[in-house]
Length: 144
Image 1: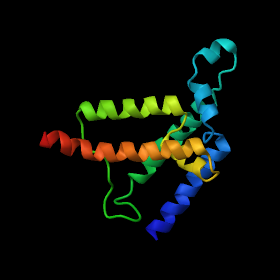
Image 2: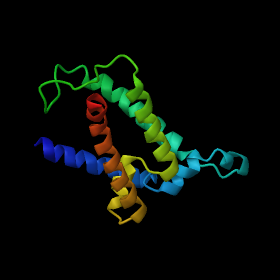
Image 3: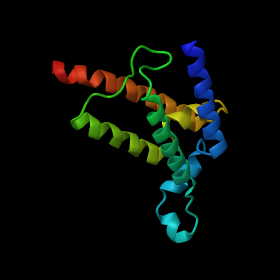
Image 4: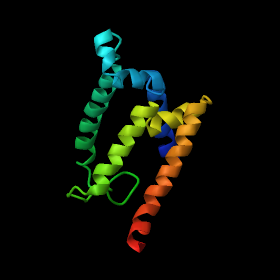
């Protein structure tokens, strides 16, 4: 049941990305292009998509955490770290740089794979390599 629900939610998320145009890297890059403001071609739609997502998330968290436990799990899985460390700063920085260069973040890139985009294929392959490095790096650093 949990697998089917996760699949349906993933499909809903992907559909939302397609409908909002956020699976199009050019749209994302046009949002990130600050010089486009001066040219009058800046696309602010990503800000509205993110704002809508924040509102839905804010309301959703308020409703969900009123429950004693999740519907399909024994406990809520929330982050427990309260201190900033190098990994928390470097990881998002690398994510943001990759997003800015490629115009993709993981969700839209995976969504774009469904329509056969070669740039998305390259991005997802690089993302998988990065994920493998991120998992191996702490072990390699400890053993050095």
